Amino acid sequence: MLQSYEATYENGQITWVSDRPSMKSARLIVTVLEEIPTTTKRRVRPTHLAGQVKILGDIVSPIVDEEDWECLK
Image 1 (cartoon, one colour):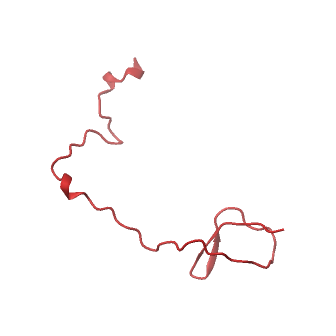
Image 2: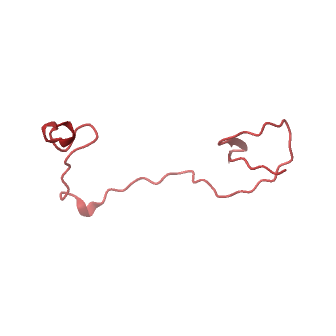
Image 3: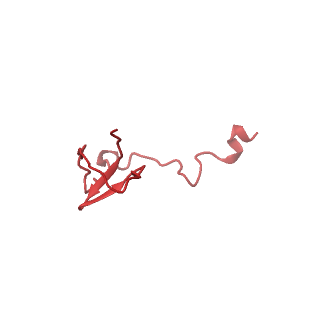
């Protein structure tokens, strides 16, 4: 019976993504789905928004004061 296992291949090495086959040796058929990019693209700041954006809050501090939170009342 054929079974499928997900793995990645890099520099001659196979790394199992999820389940690993339990057998000690087996005949394999390898199908390459897609090439994983080696470099990641850096995000570029939108220059057309320079000076036009106002940051209201972030993850550390909320946008509104705690006194205004309706869920705490």
